[in-house]
Length: 479
Image (cartoon, rainbow, N blue to C red; front, top):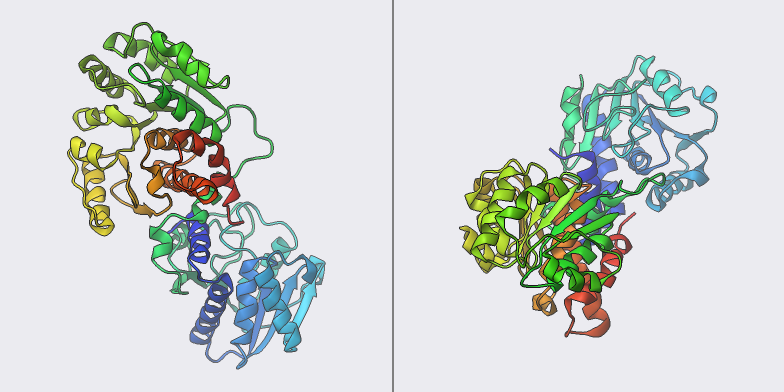
């Protein structure tokens, strides 16, 4: 089972792995044609109602595999408005080979006659909301026919994740969906055919540019819509909370505040005028500070807890008390990690240990990433929180689903890169689910390090990553 959003990411990751999208479209169209032949072997006339996106592109391919039938393709819209290159190429292939193709620029002009089969390829899984004309009018036309209806990926007008529709939707008897079933399809009164189109398992396992597709921004956004992060750190160290805070800002958080001992507040502020400092009394975090921090945390979307706090007994006691009473979202890093297994909490945690810290938490590890993948998944399940275990291959797991990140390089063994990762994770966790946030953070942090090394070679320092985080997150998106 895979959601529409995750399917888009996997599709883009497959392309990044070297599997051409045109090849996947060829496989998809072939699968649609195969189902048509299976469910209506005695049919004579097939009408394909195609949109201008890749869903329509799948149908253009299908038309070439339906030569045994009298097939006619109806394109809703002008050919020059077909939205992707590969869909346009497959449309032109039909035209050049003189297949029967009609363009419908006015929904009132759609007349598919009396076909035995209708292939609905107007809109795919990436489109939600109520249908508008010409798709709405076409859906009503299709539903009025006495024909077998085969939908490509999802019936147009139906939300693939919920199975619901906000208005008129195509009533399909059969749905040909690709790679894996979508959650909402089981709620439909239709037979679902899942077609293997050649997407490798690695496109789901390994993070890639497709994961970044989740980072879209509404043009009408306001301050705070993309998250407010509270970094709790510092005391023995001042650079760590500053790196985490800077990374959270570079990763898209709208506001970042740093709660740190007043003794080091001036030093932390000195790293950037963009930080808002909320100092607390004393030289290190202590139990007396927890009430105030909980009040602060309630006004933030995510807390990044741990960078530079140190491992003094009273500090770890305060960490435990905070987590026991906190019910929001937090990224836990550095010395604070060792407290997590001992605390019962209602908080949603993303824990970011390196392998030594993982062992200190009670987990097991291995130098072989496949073995480590299984061990991390098992420990995440036992722990009840999401783990991002840093290494040459980062392993991210919530105990149910596991992903592996391969970005990054040996230059990132330098101190402070983990603080940057924690800050990036904190920013992304403001808007994404924990597993997705951890996977995106791992990919972006490692990619930022790769960009630095590509430009300068080894010898990077953690502050070098900050300038490259935006490029790693938004420059790598596969649209």
